[in-house]
Image (tube, rainbow, N blue to C red; front, side, top):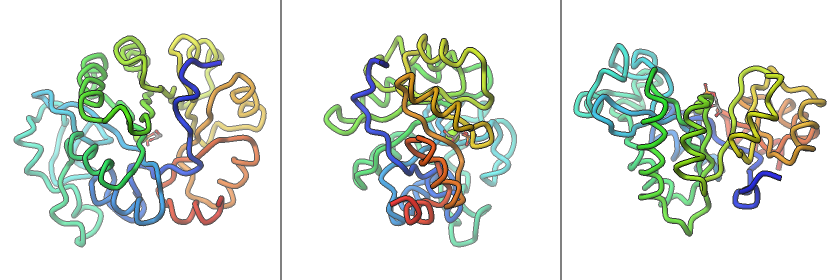
Length: 250
Ligand code: G3P
Ligand code: MG
């Protein structure tokens, strides 16, 4: 049985990048919207600026979700903080900023939100991203609050997390069905395996649960599909539309 399994109670519904259908992803407005829709957990993607500030962004590049352009890894925080991360979604969100990790954590404490921090390093920065971000989480997130789930597709991030912050529960993100998933999960001492909706089968879901791991599936925006996955033994789903899925699985 995975070591820290008892330290995290996985929810049925996790707001994906906040509430990405209604509000700009990975922004404070998005987390407020997820909470307004009834979510108690949110997922977000975190990486480092060129000058090692931890902030929230999914893509390697700035173009899709801000008025900036090019690789985020080349920008200092002073440059990143000037960008608009809301107007691309809707004029109503004009002025929304890329959040620092510290700003997101402060909001989660205020809103009583639990979180899944996905380590999404800029290319070539896996180890330092995990090291600096986990140090910051441990410094800023009170130990008496519910433990966050730390996840990544990057094995180097999860190895660093295991070695540097062994007390923080980890999730192994997969976008295929690797033959060695059990070895990976065991070696990385994860509490959950987080898999792509496209890859889920009742058989694989059963194997993951029988091995003692939590099972989360991304990204599920259809209510009937969410119900089916929970019937298969999935613990919870990441969704861009928390209210719709909460209404379906309550
Ligand atoms: O953590 C679940 C999901 O966010 C993983 O994929 O690309 O949306 O970060 P992605
Ligand atoms: Mg993510």
